[in-house]
Image (cartoon, rainbow, N blue to C red; front, side):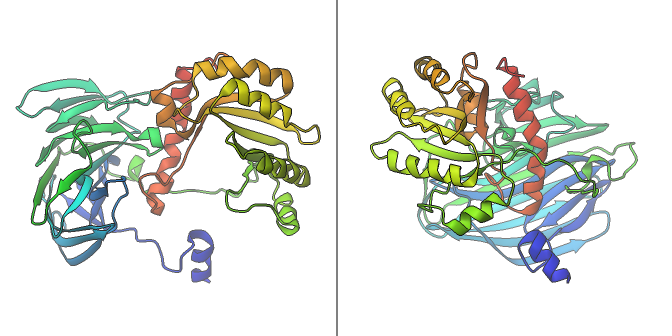
Length: 435
């Protein structure tokens, strides 16, 4: 029964790997497959994760295999070591890793990587994740290479660009816990990962201002070290906000949100059986991409018939290259029996919808579809809208996609993303007049 429940809930037969909790003085940390997660003190999470990775020339995160894993748990301190092999997508590299946790509340994580072949990489080395809950808007002191220091604050609204660059060290507080980190072996910078609904600020190695991909030669070594120090806190330890992420269901029946279903890009036409199964799921709209290329009309005709068969109104993602001409062609191809509830306008050649496109098409769409909502923005991640902000004056709403698997797909990371979604809404409201 337990195995069946795991298959239904997790899609796998084996239990989740929750890792092993280790202590460095008053600081606790969870060790999980080579990475450190959920650094906690005084009932609060002071750091989300320290990991290392190789990103290939297409920004894919390479898979890895651990070996020679050794853990010496002394109760109030620990030492562990392992080897990590990355052999993925033409990349062949081995990491020799060592982590020391002292009873004084300091953790040092050192990695030495050696290339066993020539390859191209966009990044290779450490990533540090800072949980946002207790530090947004709070002060942080940055130490730069050379020793000079500047002060700033962790972003409140989502920062479209790197809030801090040229990082060699940083100091900040979580509750009454004073934290500091020192970075060795590369120059680091920070990005606001809430742009991709990761609930963290990410400090990573190798500035994006440097050319990439970069060549790595056989025999080349990469040495990096991160040292985290957390002063003892007077706060009582407990679950606080440092508890592992969980979804809790209280059994109360609630109205479900208005969910739609998107037309498949792989199935040319829904079968009768598929239509009947979808009708029984209670969806509220049928989302259809209409890409105004040379052969868009046949797929659009099928989509309209499927929407009628499903008994669902259409929500259209309208991708335009030549807006004035193509919006007229789309309007001419509308059918009275297929209700269009919303049209979201996108520029095929831009990351987000441009003002010139909205000027050219919105009034025409409103005249042809007076009951439909008109939206614009990006079909990519929130970061694209945040960096190139679509004007909202002519439309009813702004749109962007969210995907919890951009940077990680393990269960803990997926659950963590839930808390970042409201920040995207708050930030979008800050640059639009929409409620």
